[in-house]
Length: 198
Image: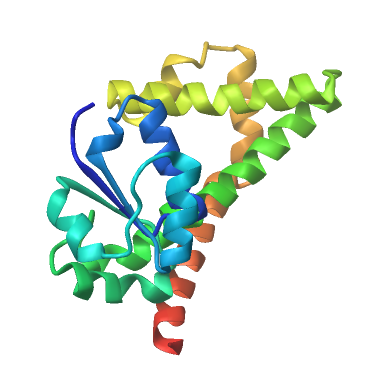
């Protein structure tokens, strides 16, 4: 991977993304992380052994890809600071917050629930948690690598009259699908409220 990437707002989520990019093979010379305060930049640079700055505009100018990793309340000022479209158009920022910023918490609930289910059916807790995490990781990776619609991927692993279809029926009966949709809608609405409260 040789694309130049700016990570604006290298806090918890930005730091995780940055470390993932470096682990995936992104050259340290091709990444331009920023933080708000100089002392944090110094500490993070020492921790990651790469330069970390505080100038968002300078980082953005050097990058082909810009990852905006800040709270929704401060996101819009980043658009003004950078002076160009960052990852998505500003009009979609609340929706991106509701889906991608809040989404990990929703996925962790799913992960926790799958692990609890594993324990319920007799697996040791550590094995159940590991299997659940690997299941989510593998499913997400297949979706990213194939580009297939999730419904197609679901159908491909659902054998007629098999165990998976029975499990899917329970999920539908429990309204998992509509509950997740409502969670993203609520998170998006809250992101809009937070902007107005500033």
